[in-house]
Amino acid sequence: MRHFLAHAALVGVMLGYFLFTTKRAVPTDAVTPQPSVDFLRKLYVADNAAYFENSLPTNTKLDFDLRDKRRMAETGAKVFGEFHISLNPEYTLAERTQELILLHEMCHIKTWGETIEDHHGPRWRACMVKIDMMDGFRDILIENYRRKSE
Image (cartoon, rainbow, N blue to C red; front, side, top):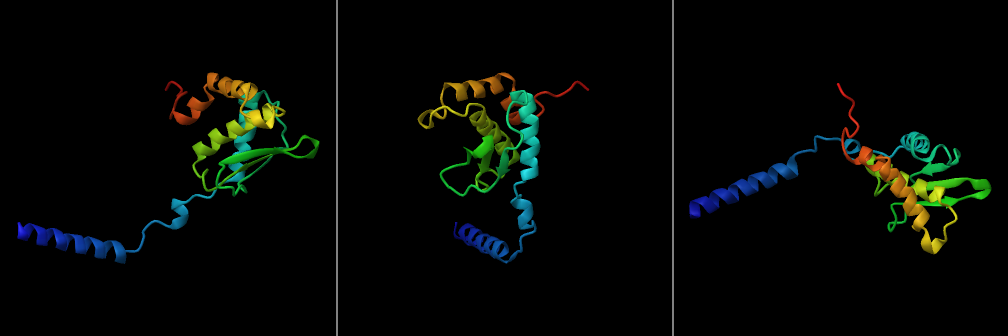
């Protein structure tokens, strides 16, 4: 038994030495992708056509400037009907997450005017259900959901 414990301790020491002396093979930028506003813009245009019949404003500002750690994203209105959707880059690195959150925020634009206390009110929920009934969320969450016959 003492031989086994001594062997296990030696393996542990060797593994620790290897882990702390080996340089990382994967570059940091490959592990942490940078969010792309261009990607968001393409999604917004495509989703506006697919789920909103191009009824949302085309001049909506999109960015990754939200720093409030309590929020993944937020939508606000500016003057002259211009909207602003800001995503928190800390929580929205994955493209699928960006797609889901963007649809959520686009429903806020569609239902703008529901009271602040009820910003996830019946009109907003109906918007989300409509997207769900059109398979919008399945297309994002399930790989090859609408795979074409080969």
